[in-house]
Image (cartoon, rainbow, N blue to C red; front, top):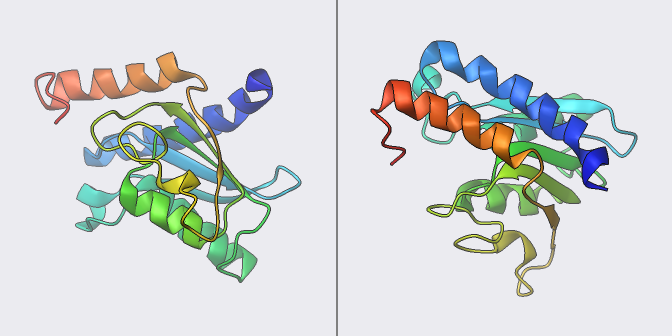
Length: 156
């Protein structure tokens, strides 16, 4: 199953690289409908947009909702290079995304199993299937390279 998910995360990796020219942390996301067609794309734009909510996942959810003409993304999969934070996990759940596939874990802010598990919290009305660690090494390498050159190796 993991091998079938790798192309999804590769698409997110391609999207992540669009963050680099603006100096944003290279995180990318894509939303796919039930047929596997990409219906939303996003990459970090916090620096470029001056917007603290311009995370890759939020950008991809907004794009998908606009293209589909509906905020409910039932049956959709969101692929992202890094484990979503609490803000993004909340938005993913509210959008009724069916599944999240991500690359590397984020032990400092992750909300899909690392620090919190917002996406699968039994107290919520919608729970999301989560598959983490897909192309983990490639996704982590992109972040390591970025932080090495932009923040002297300090990913905080």
